Image 1 (cartoon, rainbow, N blue to C red):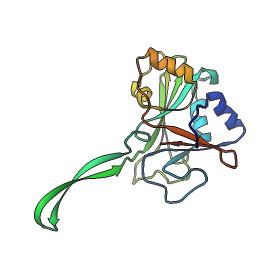
Image 2 (cartoon, rainbow, N blue to C red):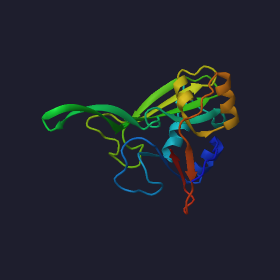
Image 3 (cartoon, rainbow, N blue to C red):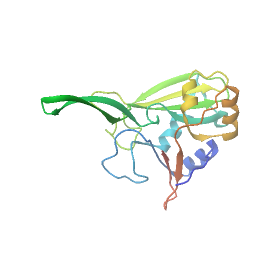
Image 4 (cartoon, one colour):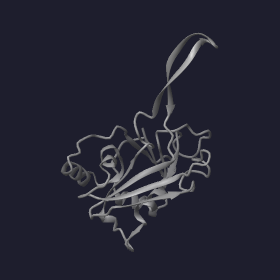
Length: 211
């Protein structure tokens, strides 16, 4: 896999050629079964991500593709480190002896995959799309009665309502030069704590992996 910048036009070309595979998240428990593409954790279909990012009307108006600066993943799905530290207390010999405290690492669970679509024009809209059909196979995200799905947020470059998404987000498809300008204008100079790698494989289908 390689680290490279893919733009919104690249995203569109892969979509139109039906060559979009999956995007693998770094957090959560590993998959029990190895599926087509890179093995790892929870994954979303890139074709679905394209629809999420580009095929939404705001005030009955579709967002022009050339108005999109970046599509970024943020939130628990891509936070680093990928685990929470929990203190566990137990006795040395079953119910006897001195209590001993230890630290246990628990993988971060997430019910919603969060995506920010950064646009040139001022747009501050968000919506949560429930259901498992956005992901690699039905039932993959279910945990009891928890609702699962996608949370998408549209923000204009001049007045973003969620700076955290910009500060900690992982650019998936983006205009690198313009995104750098926007972050600089907003005084955001931190770099993402994760890296994104791409691979086409023998079938020339695009798969991404956040590490």
